[in-house]
Length: 355
Image (tube, rainbow, N blue to C red; front, side, top):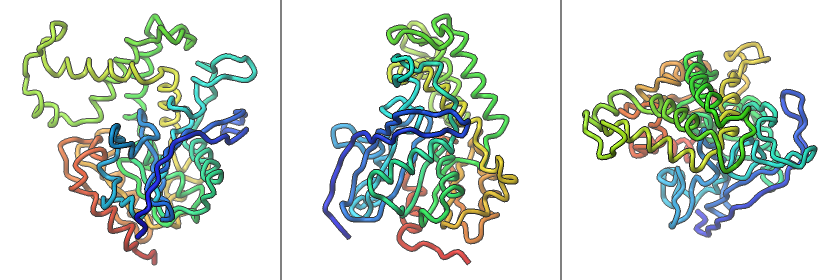
């Protein structure tokens, strides 16, 4: 075990790429975080919809998955190097709607081309090449991150030893697309939307806030909401109940850190997710995977039901599936690590051979 640690963040210039749509993106940049063992095997972490590259973070600003990624942790940063890239289309430094379009010398805004999960994975692959990484111990991620993990397994089956998708099905259901449509409608109905060409100092804040509220209703279960709030009265003057204040707060918080065009771009990418598209169906695509597969489903997950994930895992020889019982629903992959993190530690240390 190598105890020599490093921490770095930065940007990588990837150059021009052709998207799945056929559009060309020029001067693509990727923002990343690299932490952990200096000489250990590399684990790639893929983030969710409103996540970023700061999965580990620092002592002063802990990252969104630092409970899983730490020295001696379930993904032991004394043993492994951990890399997270801000996804293509995200708003934390990677090329997106916030970037300058060289052809117009202004922000892409609503003109940013449509992207897919496959485009995100291609960009990550190029970023790893820039970092001199030719093989991964594992690729892991939840939700939108889990979609990327699945595409990694199909697109580059020999590139990693282990695939760990959490709270992600092989394709996005109509139910999930319906919620994404609700979020999209809230944003584009905001008077400040202006066809996506809003000024930076006046975004469609109300619409984006409502979109986030709709999302929060699907990320947690009804049981968790009822147990947490219990019809408590709000201390705010603009809300009668504490649950209303909570949703308002979540909407306001996202508006302060996320861009509406980026949000829509990523929603559309999620809607396009189907590992079987153009590959003869998801069952055929799943059989392309050569890495060891460990899947996780979380009870009460409205968007990505655990039974659907288990059905997917059953098609892959030697795959392991874990059903996590939780009141949190979809957000279970961000919480209660002691319930399920040991499965990840075990598969990384003693991976099961595929027969």
